[in-house]
Structure formats: C-alpha cells, structure tokens
Amino acid sequence: MTRKFQNFIDGKWCDAVSGKTFENRNPARWEEVVGTFPKSGAEEVNRAVRAARAAFEKWRLVPAPRRGDIMRRVGDLMVARKEELARQMTREMGKVLAETRGDVQEGIDTAFYAATEGRRLFGHTVPSELANKFNMAMRVPIGVAGIVTPWNFPMAIPTWKIFPALLSGNTVVFKPASDTPATATSLVEILLEAGVPEGVVNLVHGGGGEVGMAIVGHPDVDCVSFTGSTMVGKKISEVASATLKRVSLELGGKNAQFVMDDANLDLALDGVIWGAFGTTGQRCTATSRLILHEKIHDRFLSMLVDRANALRLGDGLEQGVDVGPCVNKGQQETVQSYVEIGLKEGAKLVAGGSIPDGKAFAGGWFYLPTVFAEVQPNHRIAQEEIFGPVLSVIRVRSLEEGIAVMNNTVYGLSSSVYTNDVNAAFTAIRDIKAGITYINAPTIGAEAHLPFGGVKQTGNGHREGGWTVYDFFTEWKTVYVDFSGGLQRAQIDNYEN
View 1 (cartoon, rainbow, N blue to C red):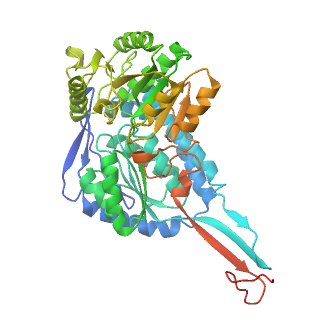
View 2 (view 1 turned 180 degrees about the vertical axis):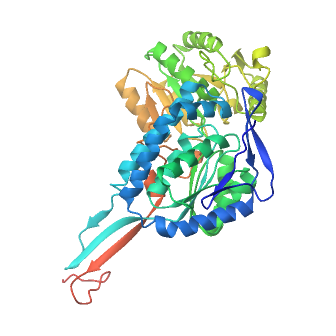
View 3 (view 1 turned 45 degrees about the horizontal axis):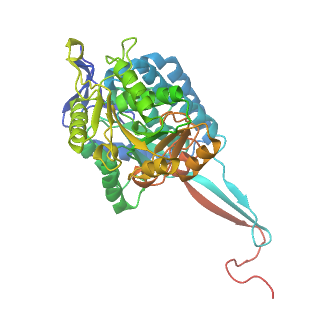
C-alpha cells in the first residue's frame, strides 16, 4: 500500500486544506510510487508562519549550547538511520547508493559541526574611545527562516540551511522539492525525535509557485535561504525585496575542469568522470566543461571517451551501477534538447547523446553519459547550465587562455585545475573567478566545515557551510555599557588640541 505523507505544522501532522495530493515516483522505475503528499498552498504557509513566529519567542531564549545538544542528537539519529535514509533518497531521485550515503554523511557532519557552534557563535569586544565604557558586538537570531531546497541533495542541502538556522535561535518553515519530499519528511521526523519543540520546525509540501513563493513573499518571514536555478533565484530576490528580508541564493553553475599538459592524466581522468557523471551531472558543481591543453588534447579525449562509454547505467539501488537516471521526464527532455543544440552548433558528438535502448531502461528516465568535442567557448552547451550528463570539451593553447575560457560564463561556482606546476596552480587560484577552486581534484566534493557558494550569477554573495552560514542566520547587535556615572558624548570632538 502506498504511504500517505503529510505536512507538519505547529506540532501536528496534517493534510492540505484542499485535500489535493501529488505523487512521488522512483525515476529509475516510474511505475513505483514512493508516496503521496499534500499539495499545499498559501493557507498552509500562513499557518506554518504563524506557528513559527509564536515558537520563536521561546526558542530564541534557549541557550545556544542547549540547542547544540539537540543538533548532536540529530547527528546521532542520522548515523543510526544512515542506510535507510540513503535507500530512500535513491528511490526518490535516482543517484547511486554510494552517493546517497555520502549525502546523509554530509548531513551528519553538518549536525555535529552545528552542535559545536552552539559553544562558539563568537562576538567581539573592542575598546571604547571613552573612559569607563564597555563595547561589544554579539549575534542574535533573526526570526522566522524560510527554507526552500532542491531535489539533487535532498538531505545535505536542507541540513546546510536548517541546522544553522535552528542553532542560531531561528524557527523554520521548510519547503522541500516536490521530487524529494519523503527524505524531507524523514529529516523533520529526526529533528522532532531529537527534541526540537513544537512550532520550531514546520514542513509544507507543494509546488514552488504555490508554496515556495508564498514563503518568500510572506511579511512575517524574516529571511529566506534558497538553492536552485538562477532564473528562479532572480524572481525570489525580486519578490523578497518588497519586505526587505534577507535572502541567501545559491544558484547555477557552469563549472570547468582544466587539464594542463604537465598533469597526471590518469588522475585527471578519474576526476572528470566523477565530476561530470556523478549524480548524472545533476549537481550545481558538476563538471560540464573540460578544458584541455592542446598538447594532451587528443590523447586525453580518447581516454575520456573509452571511460564514458564503459560507465554502467541503471537503478542506483543495484550493485555495480555507476550512473542513475535523470530525476524526471522533464529533466531527460532538457538534456536531449541540449544535445540537439550542440549538434546544430557544430560540436562533435563523441560519446552518448541518446536515451539508452533496452528493457532495463524502459521504466526510467535514463540518459547516456555524453561527451562533445570541438566545442567553442561561446557555444550554448559551453555557456548554459544543462544539469545532466553532458560534457563539453574545449581545446586551448596556454594556461592564460584556459583561465580566460573558464571565466567566460555568467556563473562562478566551482573550478578545477590539474597541473604539477606549483606556479601555474597558484596563478589559477588567483585568477579564476569562482567561489571554489580545486587543484588536482574534481569540481565536486565540498566539505561541510568550509564556505560553499559562488560569484557572479551563481548567487548573491552569501555562503553556506562552515562558520560563514552563521553570519546569514544571525543579526549583529552592538552593545555599549557606560559605567562612568555621567553623560559621555561620543561622535563629537573629544580630543584636545
């Protein structure tokens, strides 16, 4: 029997007022229904925001170390349920078990990091210009945080946002992606089991237009953290500006791996296969451009084609599968449309480029790992985010040209350079316009205790991960304590000539 899931609002599991639902299906086996979920709207968002606003008044007063204790218990529960959560994720969005286990582990790491941050949340004390006066700046929670997350990392990305929001003393209204609502439900269940009080976390299922934008535009939501496409991010920024709420946007990428002529080619090949085709290319940090120095271009391309053609597609729950399906039919169609665009632009298809044949693939949204050669830097397949297993190979003559090609997009998330020349490596680190740069490693693989985010149209300057995300989820309050016993006037000329 298909499981019926519900929203979680003000400490209660509940259906949508309309009674409407939507199905969540396995993209590798589309006939398999993971569950049905409430198709919510503005009414449910209003109730969730009211509950979060009321709960904030008590939650903000809970000492941060005690909030950290809850985060530690969350991490322990995730450790105990790791395999169950990983298998649930693979059924929902398709990536192989090795990757969904990593997705859960990233959430575990984020929980334990948040637990320790409860005893830091450092402020500043500074000298006063006046006698008998004490100055400090401290962090305080903002209020109600709206959390809107994507389907490609259904555990890790919500934890990147929700854990620091809660640790900082905020309450949460959470809208997960409609393609991965079951994992989101499991996360909320874990938070409740760990001791998060009623009203502090509220879960509202539904579409982005009906639920996501209702959260963004709600006057009692104080900040919004969103991960998704640049197009939607721009709309969120526009809507949120009406109430001047704080917004964190982690958006698209067109990430490049650059292989120099002195690089370890076997290592670079492992990196690009993992970076381009891990998660079926459905990562904001996925390697979608491969820049090759002309001296190694032909040799490396031949190695790449052989490896790409050898990758095994299939259900991510099956042992030995390297690449799972696209998340849904629409994503598969998007990939196919970009393959057709690449061919029309004159790029040379050297691997993949089609939906695989055979009974094993008939029930899912699979697409062959695809490689284009002879791609020009201005081609659409080298400029636009595809979010699928499509890699564009570009030939360059020098380090300087390679860096220029890397920088020649509207995005600036992740980047990678393979070289054994330390001077070239540090030149690349300095000159690449990206929020993340890897040397001799692929464009994917961020760690939970470091800042994550990009420049240009990849976001609006905020960072997830590490200590920096706590800057987003807290306000700075400046405090002056004057114990002189008399009126002292600052900001005037107190200095004698």
